[in-house]
Image (tube, rainbow over all chains, first blue to last red):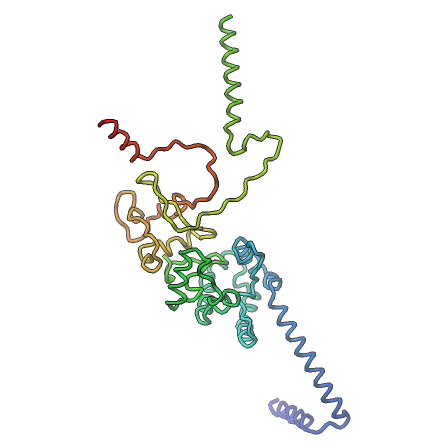
Length: 200
Length: 152
C-alpha cells in the first residue's frame, strides 16, 4: 500500500520533469498563460461573489437577525443615500487582509452547515462572542473598515455638534481611542453589555 | 311645556358644545373626517447641547441632543455610557441625579435603580415643532414674586 503510493509519486515526477514530447513550447507557454488568466479571473470572480450583501443574506442566520437590525440605522437609510453593505464593514478591502479574513470565514461555513446559530435563541447565546470578535478586530486594525469612509483627517469638526466635536477631539486626536471604542452597536443591536468596558 | 322647552334648550347647548369641540381638535386640525389631512412636516430634533430651564424643581430635565437609535433595553443602556457616575469624567456629561441610585424606600444602591432604568420614560428630546395648544403655565417664582409685590 505504502510502496504503491511512493511508486505513483515517482511515476508522476518522472513525467512531470521530462521535456514535453508532443506539445510545442509555444502551445505550452500561451496555453499556460491563458489557463492562468482563466483561473485567476474565475477565482477572483468567485471571491467577489462571496463579498456581496446578497451572498451574506442568502443564509437565514444573517437575513433574519443582523440584516433586520441594520435597516433602521443610519448606515442603511439616510439623507444622502449612501449605504454600507455587509462586506463594507466586515471584510477588509486590501487583498491580503481580505484573503486572511476569508480564510477565517471558512469557520462560518462550518457554523452554517452544523447550525451553530440557526435559531434566534442560539444566535443570542453566541451574540456576545461574535460581537467581541468584531470589536477586537476593529480595535486591532484601528477601525480600518470605518476609516474606508470616515477619515478623521477629512472630518470637519466645526460641522459637528459641539458635543461630538469635543468627544472626537478628546478621543481620536488627543487620546488613543479608535472608532469602535465608543461607537459600538451602531449598526446592530448590542449583546448583554454587563462587564464590557465602558458599559454598565 | 316648560319641560319640553328645557329639553330643547339642553339639546341645543349640547349640539353647540359638540360643534365647538370640533374647533379644538388640534390633532386632526379641523379637517372633515372624510378628507385626508396634509401631514405636518417632521420637525428637527434640538441638538444644541444647551440645557433648558426646568419649569418646576422636580421636572425631569429635557434631553438637549438627538437620541436616534439609542439602545436602552435589557442588554444595554446607551445613555448610561455617558451619564453614569463612572463615565462622566470622560464624557463631561451631567451625571444622573443621586435619586436614580435610590430605591423607593430611599435606600442607596450601588447601581442604577431598576425603576429608573428606562431614561426616556421621563427624559425626552425636544423638537422645533410649534405648540399645538396654548399654555398659561406660570412659574412658581413668578407667582411668589407677584404675591410679595401685592403684600407690600
